[in-house]
Picture 1 (cartoon, helix red, strand yellow):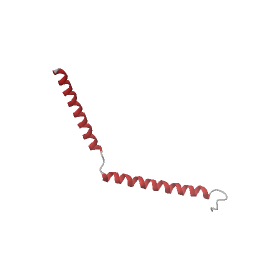
Picture 2 (cartoon, rainbow, N blue to C red):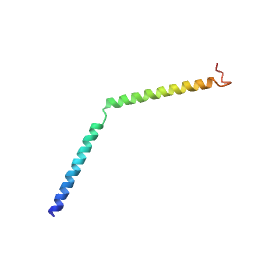
Picture 3 (cartoon, rainbow, N blue to C red):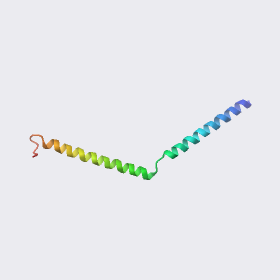
Picture 4 (cartoon, helix red, strand yellow):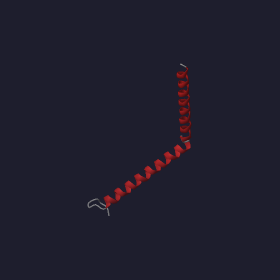
Length: 71
């Protein structure tokens, strides 16, 4: 009976250490709000740039087609 209790105590200690380590590691990985805001800003700038490029390429293609009214 003593062996079972000691084994359970050791297993519980190992699990507690593992949970503590994982939570400590994840806390270090989390990004502050400032970085999240900068990431969102960069993403929105990238989308605006891509939309602008897409619009200008579409205009260029239409201008070269016959009957499009372009020069």
